[in-house]
Length: 375
Image (cartoon, rainbow, N blue to C red; front, side):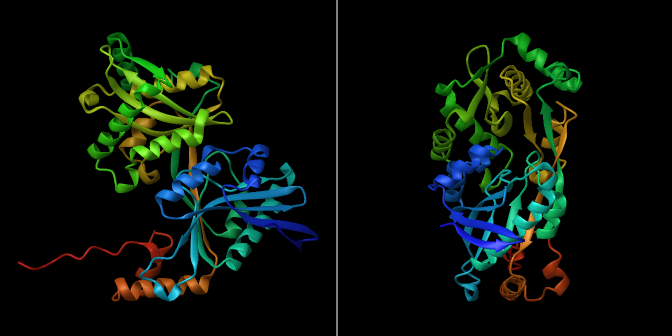
């Protein structure tokens, strides 16, 4: 239900809404956004994390703010805080969306983010972790006023309006491999959905090969729900060997001209031939032909400059920053939760150890494993 109040000389109307609320889609129809903001995607990912999909929406004059979230109960072992909640962005880059006049974004952004934090406090939310978008940016001053802005690292992006740069910015090794695969008769197919089940298995085998954490494993129903939820915004690219076998595949999304690489994999039998180079090359060519604007490859694992990041940088010089925002809504409750966690899981930790960690919120970090000294 929308609630109105006076703020800074004009009325502020705000509400917490669910994916079924028509106000959710109405807002997105008026604002630049990505697939991470779609109500179906927020609901789908909430199901995996045992959270409640919600969004905060506010209007102040001609400016408005929209924040998609997963609302979570606090961990069971923090029983003294029963009834409190915390919130986190869904997986990906579901940044808050701000609509305001170009010269008014900084002031309205600060005002509306402040109202968001106040609304969260009234709702019993202790902390909020927001994943920001490399393209859909908010005024930095407004973000820093609301919480702690964290720079995680660069992500890799291709300007699709300049296909003339595709080949010149591609690393020599990648170019050589792409030519070899083309000469050998490998080909790319788009939205060949008969191959979807094969792709799902290839993705699973790839995650097993790279020893990915549990968070990166998705069952078949997730892929099916993803396709149903995103509809024409989801695309499948498969790389086929001359005999028809699928050597590699990826699902990517397109919303408002922005193509996002989502999930990809390589068949074990073709790893030495590195068909992922041909996969990315094919996607960028296809996306440019569709008239899309950007192809965002993402970054390394956890935004680190690892081997995955190095592979992606072999296609383009384009970079965008990935950042997050940490908001401690209720400092007193947050401190209590951190003390409770420390008492139960790390009673010998110093105050510096309790507060210097990189995990947020600290009371959700996993305890260090107990190493047995028994013979």
